[in-house]
Image 1 (tube, rainbow, N blue to C red):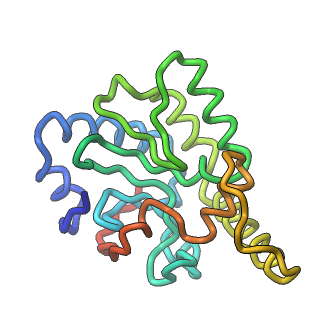
Image 2: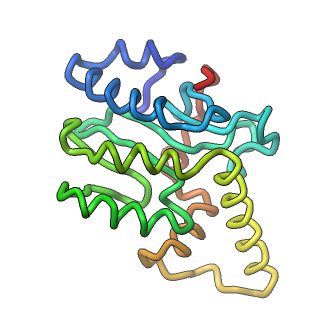
Length: 196
């Protein structure tokens, strides 16, 4: 569910106590492990972590007015979600699934959306490592490489209908088409920012 809150604090205050406590616990893990070049704020109606325009002026290729999305934390109707774009593309996707499996916890995940109902559902150490493994500059490089790859494929006359397999390469191709949790709804993000 997207909120109309314009600040992270306002977003958290509108949640039920149990949801607020869970998101605050995950937020603490994120803030302790995320690269300082990312900022936190409201983006697409949820708590967002993104590369600000001052670091990456082109912004999000699907909507250049928006900073480049990296992660999101949300309270949905039936569950809570952690959107982690760094595991949507590149080698991190396979690492993440394998590392999570080793914890013995069940991974309820879409392309880059980790769904949970309580903090105990999460492998917080794996989430922390995922944030450490993808600093802003590396994330930017991967996003640009994915966009360049897509552009080159179009130039060679590649088919638009690519298979939707679970490989990291296919997820990267899907990500560059704008198939992210943020763009499915078509909502615009708010501009509240906070350096993490």
